[in-house]
Length: 311
Length: 311
Image (cartoon, rainbow over all chains, first blue to last red; front, top):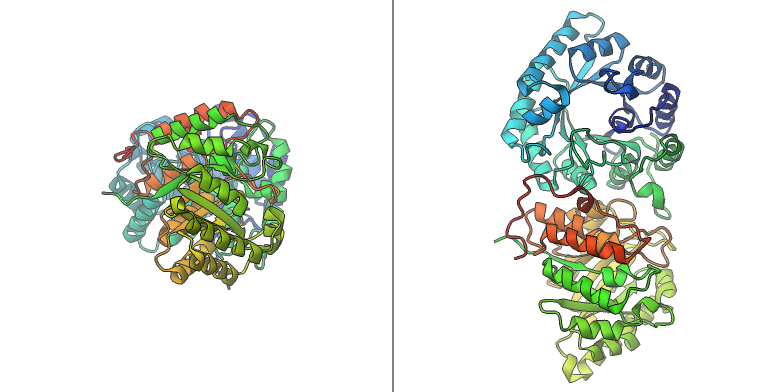
């Protein structure tokens, strides 16, 4: 029995956030179905944000509803505030993600709130979950954006990130995500910050959300693995970025991350050949988008034996 | 005092090997001068191979002669056989690299010899060094290509790589390079193989030569650092590949590797801003070549403090 690692596809949310093409709902659903068939278990399928600002997510309710019909899919959605959370709770999704930036200025740019106001909003979302009988078992995942630095503020103190993580945990988060939103993190920092978070939060599940903006994304996954992190976000072809992070060229590539993890002996459940085929299916749907990642281009090593793929 | 790491630029050799543009000698020299000014200390400047097969290296003698006039440059050249080594010895270079493939079939494709014949040829080169008074102090570096797998043979047994490394060490190598010529290696394998080589070879300096063909190159550097490796090869913009490795899309990117190592607290001597400028100078000289690497595109993080850069 190999140790399992959870690898969540965030392409339909984080990946599409900056893409100018509006992907039709049925294509998003086909993408999700193909990934589940390839062994992906978790997908962040949409974002409950204002359709006027993000028209690519104007179909959030329909996407959530459709993805609930896909067997074996643990679908999640991002919400920036209570308003979005209410829509997400209404949708029937069992997994909802909230985000607050460790950087005060990034948080203001992203959600027009102070960090403190966002933390209070998270408490409101937890209260809303409790107030509704049907949503008592909905998991709330809390992401701390710019945990490894910010394009507006520069370095972010580790103590600040840990203090926010503790606040989110105490408020009722079921998972805490340390996000390198702008691709500033390095393996040394990753080891230090995740070890500090594990020490501060005890048994709370931690997830790493890395971007490959400066080429260290996959090395950061290795560093996080070394200190016990077993949950990661990635996106097909490394799609994505951040509207307030100039030059932030995307999430870590899902195929390369799966290749790394499988090569290290972990069980991602993902069939590598199959996920490379999904990429070939999605790439033509997003004309003009650069798809990053290397293993899809080069193919698997000759004689590469993926152990019990798709398990 | 930060610990030093040697980061050798192999672009003018490994990088140009597959490039169709023939770079004029003066451009190669300008490239080398610019890199030395950016703090690079070691450059593999050319290859002493048949000009009929590799016209891009027909100026090997001139390049070697010119690079000897560049202050602070530790210039090396690759030789596939004694014939090439004699030219290299004649040139006055103080550092000569030999290569043998762990894969029998790759070695045959690359240098038309069995592995055993290549090992005997290395012994001949060591004897030639001894026979010439002037070359007694020339360092011989011995690279084992396809140490992490081969596009023709698939997996390569670790015991075979270690046995070849021991032969090269006993024959008189001053440095042994484990090369992932085709980008098959993963961090787990890197840790295991380099640890085994260190155990077998004792104080012999080891160098890692990684390609980023499947996206794990920078993570492999981190893994090698973890087991004590302090010498690496890389190329500007990730130029390079291997003529017998289809889809092998290049060495690890020099700028990203330097960014990783400096971020981990090591002293590469390389000024990151300056090396990014060198890339901007070289890229137009190789029209149609794809330059890989991320940090040059995104820029350094805001407020990034490189400690005593250029030292």
